[in-house]
Structures are given as C-alpha cells and as structure tokens.
Amino acid sequence: NPRIIFNEIPVGLPDTNTLVVDNSQSMDLESVPVQGGVLVKTLALSLDPYMRNRMRPVDVPGDMPALPLGETVTGFGVGVVLRSETPLIKVGDHVYGFMPYQQYIVVPSIGANSLAMQGLGLQVLENKYNVPWRYYVGILGMSGQTAYYGLKDITNPKPGETLFVSAASGAVGHFVVQLAKAQGLKVIASCGSDEKVKLVQGLGADHVFNYKTANTMEELKRHGPIDVYFDNVGGATLEAAIENAAQKARFVLCGMNLWLLSRYRVKMEGLIMTDWVDKYLDEFLEVVPRDLASGKLKYLEHVYHGMDKVGQAFVDLFTGGNVGKSVIVLEEE
Ligand code: NDP
Image (cartoon, rainbow, N blue to C red; front, top):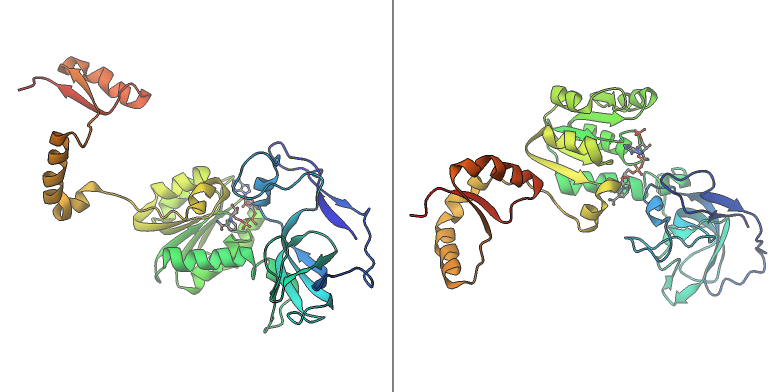
C-alpha cells in the first residue's frame, strides 16, 4: 500500500528528499476491517503551497498542525469507495476530503451519521457534469473555491474595473483571471516565465507580464490603476500593487506571506483622516479634552525646545528616537 511520507524537514525550500514514497506497508483489500466505515482507493491528491507551513518540528507552533516526521502526509484527496459498511456511502461512490496520502485508506465510522478522516468529514461527490474526478482536488476543490469566494465576496467587482492577479498561472490565479474576464473586468496578470505569460494570455487576460524580466511597478503604472488586487505572493508585488491602487481599491490577501491577515480574515481599507471630520469632530472635541483633563486619557509627547532642534527631531522620527508625539515647543504661553 504505497504512501507518501514526510521524510525530512526542509531548510528553506523543499527538495526531493522532503516527501518520499514508502512501499513497505501492505493491505489485504478483501479482509482489512473497515470498522463500520469504508475502504477507499485514492484517485488524486492535492499538493499546495500551505503544506510547506506544516513541515516543521511538531513542537514549533503554527497555524496548522505540524506534519509528524516519518509519518504519512495528509491533505486533500479524491477517492472511490471499494467496500462499505455504512448506509451513508455506497460502493462506487466518489469521495473528497482531508486524507492520508496513501493508495488505500480505511475510514472507520465514528457514529451513526458520520465518518471521520483526520477529524474532517468525507464528502460524497455528485459530479453532475461528469468531469474528471481529479478536478475535485483542484479547480473544484480548495484552489478553485479560494479564487471564487475571494473574488465574489471580498472584492465584489464591477464590469469595467481593472483587476490585477499575481501567480496568475497558478492553481488559484488562472481561475481568477477567467472569473474576472467573465465578469467584464480588465485583467492585468503577472507570472514567472514567458511560457506562463503565453498561457495566461490564452486565458483572455488583457495584459500579462513576466515579473522576473519586467518591472512590476512600471507595468502597473502603465496599465493600472488597480481596482481589485488578488494577491497570491505578497512581498514586492504587493507593494507595487498598493502604489498603483485606485481610490477604494479592494485587495484579496490570499498569498502565504500574508497568512496572518488571512487567518484573522482582515479586510484592509484606506484611511484619510479628513474624510471623517464632518461626522466626528464635534464629538471628538467634547470627549477627548474632557478625558485628558480628568486623567482618564494619557498623552505621550516628546517635546523639543527651540526651533534649532528640528533637524534632530525629524531624524528621531525615523530612527525611533522619539517617544510619543514629537513636538517642537518655541514658547509655552
Ligand atoms: P500555485 O499553484 O500558484 O503555485 C505557486 C506559484 O507561485 C508558483 O508556480 C510560482 O509561479 C509562484 N511563486 C512561488 N514562489 C514565489 C515567490 N517567492 N514569489 C512570487 N511568486 C512565487 O499556488 P496556489 O495557486 O495553490 O496558491 C496561490 C497562493 O494562494 C499561495 O500563496 C497559497 O498559499 C494561497 N492560498 C491561500 C488560501 C487561503 O484560504 N488564504 C487557500 C489556497 C491557497 P510563478 O512562476 O508565476 O512565480
């Protein structure tokens, strides 16, 4: 019963020794007890960037449980049921779920109405449109759903707007390109090779560039501004996107580098203080001076006496030399 094991914790990027196949185990498909559940033959397994986050020592905390070294890798897969002892699933049903990466899997029953695999349920697939089963770990699984939900709910794009997507030839990105085109958006896309550029052009993107040979900032300046950015990579590309954002732009923070923002479902919205003056100034001038006077509110300020201190005061702002609000005081009264 071949399985994929987590063989070595990578230092930096994974290499071919990180995940290896182990053929040492066997399973008798006729006689193995399925404990009220099912025996599944695996058809397809997903490989995703998030898995790198799990490749760390088990005692190092992280967002997702660490993969135990030497153990079978777990992730999203699709399989077909070979034997069943539950009325919930028939022989021949196809199932999708979070599963151990091995050829044959026993999924025991954990109660009258549920089966469990690594704590997550198995979903019986309908496949009304008769697509290949492996699609359910890709465009119909986590990757496709990420593109679909991210675009739909977070950005709510309108026809005629401009969308930029990074890693545009990737699992999530190439679907974003197509969803956006179908919704009447102008699409700018970046990816990491000339071949990928051609592929993404073939998907209908309006302007595609290779970020390794082109200057992302220049490209976005020329083809932006950006109303919607679907970020799959973070870093310098995200910074360039921010520089080229249109007013009221919406950014989907999907990429790994920004995982903390994803974890807390953060939405970012630009703030211009003066937008809020009409609404809140009277209230502010009522509440804040009162609370300062009563001592309820503390004010930290860094006072520099005399105009000749301005040079140093300004430097301090960028070197952490100030504590609280920097102010040059010429006279007190
Ligand atoms: P991809 O299939 O796009 O594979 C990764 C691609 O990213 C590579 O092909 C490469 O393309 C590009 N890439 C790799 N390293 C870098 C780098 N250092 N800088 C810039 N680009 C890089 O992955 P997915 O489509 O599955 O995932 C895309 C992103 O979405 C990932 O960050 C993933 O973690 C995240 N994600 C988040 C989810 C969420 O719920 N928040 C759910 C699913 C995915 P190229 O050659 O073009 O550089």
